[in-house]
Image (cartoon, rainbow, N blue to C red):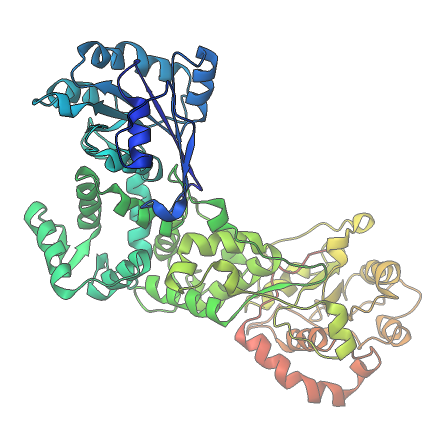
Length: 591
């Protein structure tokens, strides 16, 4: 919501603009009225909306046209004052003032107008019959108020309506011509309904309605009030209530009713609570709350975030098969402005026999997004309504920022639960098969061309390095040796060599020494044999060892060659691997 409101009063001379301002401030009609009142500021604590309000007067006698145009451009709302006993001042509303304001305001940011009929104490009749056609002609007119500066009639109401026109404008929500909500408003409220429908049955039951009410208005509905709301919907809409719960149609009807009855602040309260700005777009502050991630630190989801994501999965896994079908996945992301996961995700996480993302694969993809692009993760959690449903201040509360890796090495222990493994290897060495095998597959789905001469800092920043060579290609190991010598000889990053395609006859590598001897010289574990050409799922022992090495970065390469270390450390790493802290094609930098 806006931090302050600027109200400008314009109109013909002698209609009572200055008197209205002075009567508001002093709460009595002034005996002496100057040409123009000085700008006044009403503090936030004495306004109904708790927002500072600036009231600006205009005087034709004291100000130039240029000064008027400047004030019009700065105003958040403009009150066009006319005298109810002066037909000329009423005619000037449409012949002069509205066109003048339109010419001096940005077409894309419509300024709301309030028509103010002053001096109602001088007549017995109302001017509304003349004013209503004007209101119907110009959609920017929010409302019309008849008042009297002399007897203080509707003075405070006038400025309240002006403030309300800025803070809770009708324009973005409702189309008077069609007598219906605008598409953007319907879209926003539809997302809000779906986020609030915690069991995804298409109905807001009493518990969900009470949670929604408490979330938006800090108070639950009394049982009778809840029934009254549903009865209003029942009387006006056949399918607005189903199984004693509010349907989406009923929910939208209620908000249409609020707006039509002048209670659009209710709808705005809901929209702003769910992150929307004045243009009915999700606010950048809502989607991207502050989160400081120092260098050499990583980002992970914490327990609360995983619980929330589990509830989202359960909500959309309607057939309870622990996997998300394409329809269920689309339904899950229906609250997003775009589809965040493409078909490639199915090739990088665990899927079932039908190729649908499993629960484990779903959490793995979230873990990956958090690790690689935490801002995108915050955005995604915002679309899902994390801060609202989890009752947290923002999505940032669902993220853990790990400590600097240097501290892990000093303390000889890590607090991280997500590790990055970069995989290097020459063309055709079997990298893709190695990566896919971790997901229980035995197919080569993708080949990546190495660009050894252009390794960036991102390629080198990881917790562990895999160097893959093809045992059946005599020139394959040479690539691994060159990468290691150029980039990792003096690095503290643990390295492992993978002897891929071990089902094929092993050919002597055309290098100065054998891979085994190379590992001994550089104090690395011996090459690990691997093949994905098996009837059964490929062995996952290597992945457990990789996780172990990442978990114990302080252990020397020499210790990694001893069997006692593996026996001591691999139990914990096995748990990590089985739980699905997955290293897969997008996470593992392929080379």
